[in-house]
Image (cartoon, rainbow, N blue to C red):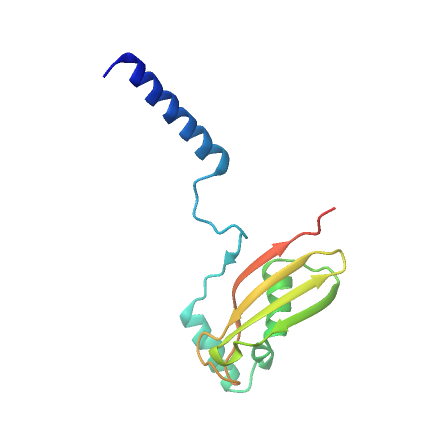
Length: 134
């Protein structure tokens, strides 16, 4: 090939690499949801505790969401509202949105990893933090 063809190919490659560096090359979804690893053995132990009359708060997805935000993520602002979408509750999944007074919004997806009924514990599967735009 001629020198000119090599030059054109090199320029195209440089533009491609520059574009990849600017836009990024990861497979993270555009909304930046963060997945939470659920330890199956821990979930079974927590379910056993609830079945034996302890830790009843784990049966309430909104309470689990609040505790996750304050204890795991260390978000302790004043909550303005909590909204729950329970259309998939029979499949063991609930979507919660927690809105803080400062405008921060946290969306959470909770799941029932052991039992998918009213006696099953809830755990956070993933979350998305949306800070208020100024």
